[in-house]
Length: 389
Image (tube, rainbow, N blue to C red; front, side):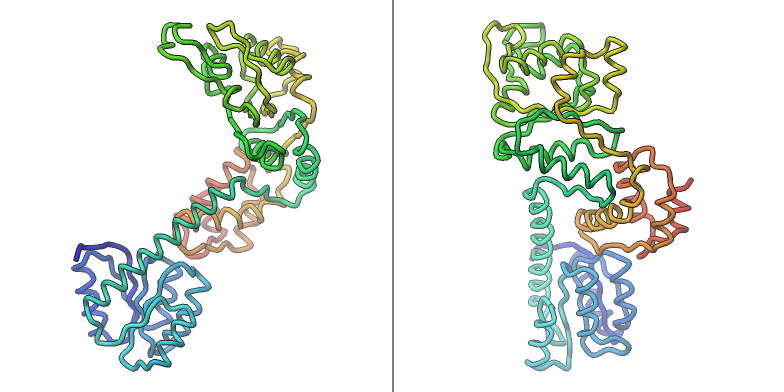
């Protein structure tokens, strides 16, 4: 049988059983931790991520069935295999009813035990993959928050999304402008069509027109083949122009024409192509100031700014921080395939006092850092050590 790997926790009050299982499973490639009773096992299960748990039923302090129930509350995705020398059919049935993956009698048959562990690992892996897929299929993340600013945005999205009105989303970097754009598309009549995103700040000015409108083969030195632009790819759907304030003036003129006439022309081409695109734009710049500085066209500004949604900074909505932290802790636990960590009230309060120059993006990174570097519960001292430095 091919060797397999994973982290296994063995909980048994009999040292000889722990030693035998440790030797067998270590030889098979597993990393093993041991606990002498259910209480110690529960603490270890809380502090570290395991792929499988082997747990005796009859133990002092906390018995196996009680451990099973508590472990399911911490991380229900980890398979727990019960092992016991005092077993009966009734005990086995009771263990499975309480959530055990399987029941193995002592002394365990080696081949059966390894097959059971392999199957449990497969189940665990499939469960994690299913969670990731559900997250992807569900599409748009929820807009988290109960502050007045977020309630206003949610209300505006509900009213505007079903229309084809163009929307300009403003706000600092990291506040969640892209999320608002995704919600607008997801709740629109175009939701079953493409949402095409273009980061105007990330594309060199000499290439932005090719990116948006496409180009014909040979239209410039590196144009070795025809390219379809983002406007065409978004035909029938939504085009999200992120950081639109960084778009070059020549590209702005072509975008304006596309919005006015519903037509584009590829770079190096002369054929007009009809496009039916809803445009949502976002920027962290003051576009009216950019207009004054002659960096942005006033006519394009008015075309884009049919509906204005301003996303407040995190410092303007600190009451939402506990909800955001809760969501991030849940997401990170799912991404890492481990038990969710908790955070105490003093730590949350410390994070609310912090000045968030990077907004929600920074908070997400900080929560992930705290999950990695802290114990089973994130405390105020963890925040002081790892954030407020």
